[in-house]
Length: 156
Ligand SMILES: [Zn+2]
Image 1: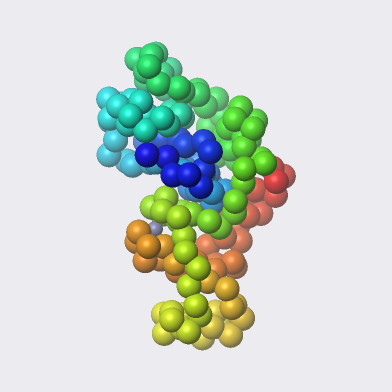
Image 2: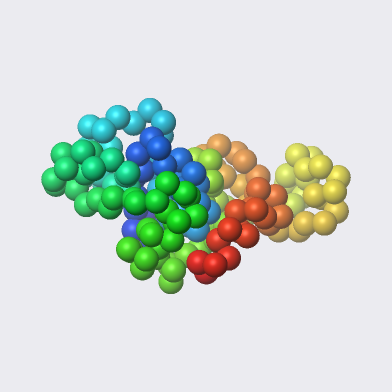
């Protein structure tokens, strides 16, 4: 199901992997897998109340019982702008709350508990860390986020 941290939950087709990462970065529950076929996407969308994001008109046509949005742009920054406008997402953004890789909500973790997994520079310059309970990745501002955050700036 769509978790309660995210008012709007999405499922994205196989061509929208980058968009999925950006939506996760903004805190939105966004299912994506390169292995979902159209039928699975539609089934999951109906079962979990997710909105289908796709650039495939035929997929949306066959998804009569699911909510969907046809993404127009082929560029992820434009795609994100489209989805933000269509669903009024700006006020719901919670940056750095969700794992970019696996969509799980992150939890705070104490620096001393993960210190042995950090490079010396990271240990020196950063104090606030989060861990993904799903895939065990460690996040901190300044890590994977810098470039992504820059391209989000015009939206937030
Ligand atoms: Zn994860």
